[in-house]
Length: 117
Image (cartoon, rainbow, N blue to C red; front, side, top):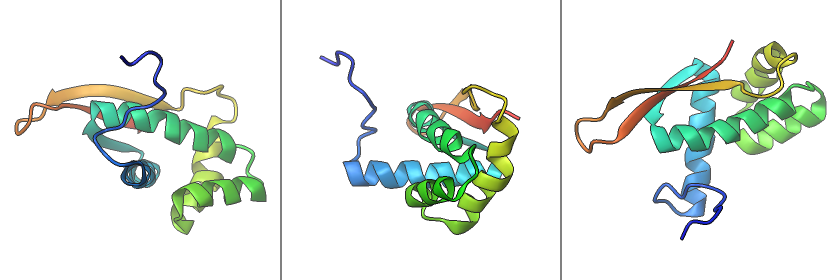
């Protein structure tokens, strides 16, 4: 029974799941919009929104926190200096999930996840 379980396992080990979320977060920050499966998009939403909330301050601690999560200098710099300042007036809800199609090979529900601008 699920009973308020905190996250989706996505059929992966914890280290694989962490790497997946990190790579998806880097992709969405670089591109602004990506297509992935619906469960991955729903799990990514909380991960990215937490990073944006921290990055909104824009100080050196924000840089450190985001870099520790993403381990990518270029993406960290873009998030803290370009993306996060757009959301200073917004109290959460930085991403939007739009269901798109059913993938032909395995009938997985697909969705776009994008940053709200």
